[in-house]
Image (cartoon, rainbow, N blue to C red; front, side, top):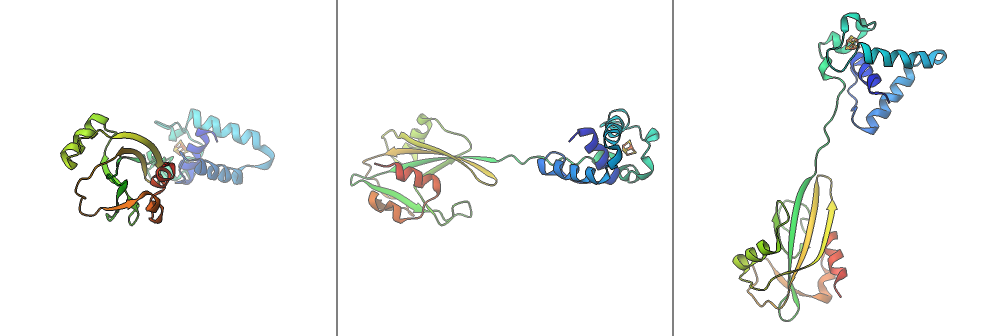
Length: 212
Ligand code: SF4
């Protein structure tokens, strides 16, 4: 639908439909259809576009010379700049999950249950390092050395991205094998053939299914 027509309709009738969204534009179209004089559709459309481009302009509309100023909601309520309504699209929060798939010398995996008030609460996961952006392998290695005293360099084995309602998750899975280090508090060991007995988020299930 023409932007000029949307602007006039929203101002004249005080319509708060979102002019940025497809569904909002559809509703504007339905509203306009009800106003159309069936015998003069082409003239009506042309008049609306002329009014929008010459008088009811986006900035500094010429309300003094507007033929519909007497019925205009926005002018009457001095809210011209409030119309048309444009809802800003919310950007998704990006989260970068670096999973360490730690295995001991018996090929048992470190896992734990997510307890925080966050996504995937109550599901299981591997050792997670979350950052605001993807970290390099060198930085990850330094972090692991400091946190877990693991000297071995991790290997990137799998990556996955998933869009949730308000978040975009980027998950990276790094394997570290043969590590017989003390378990962190909430972790426990699970053999590969028993991993699927636990509930995991989708990204981790995909990784587990990819294990040979
Ligand atoms: S009165 Fe002003 S704001 Fe209202 S339709 Fe006319 S030009 Fe637009």
